[in-house]
Amino acid sequence: MTAPIEAIMTSVAPTTAVAPLEMGDVSGAAAAAGPNEAFAAKLGGALENLQATQSKADDLAVQAATGTLQDVHDYTIASTEAALATQLTVALRNKAVEAFNEIMRMPA
Image 1 (cartoon, rainbow, N blue to C red):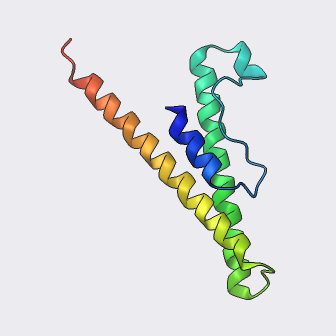
Image 2 (cartoon, one colour):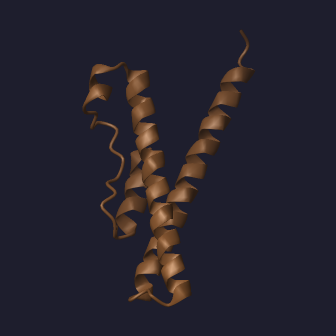
């Protein structure tokens, strides 16, 4: 499952300090907590990174609209990164819902 994620992350040159999500890297309180809490912390961090990426793209869009943006390529790259991150998040959500529904169909 990580191969497609790594392919997406390496195909787009990152312009922000947002690091790709690595499932093996658990630190702080999440390391002391159980696997459920560690997963929840990683999921929350990934969603915060998505929000930060979208916020950066929104800020650059406003700068482009007002004419204060120095390089239009910055907005194009940020917009593409935000779109890819959103598509990846939606795809993961859809797979999770599909897996949950499949589990719920299993006989007891």
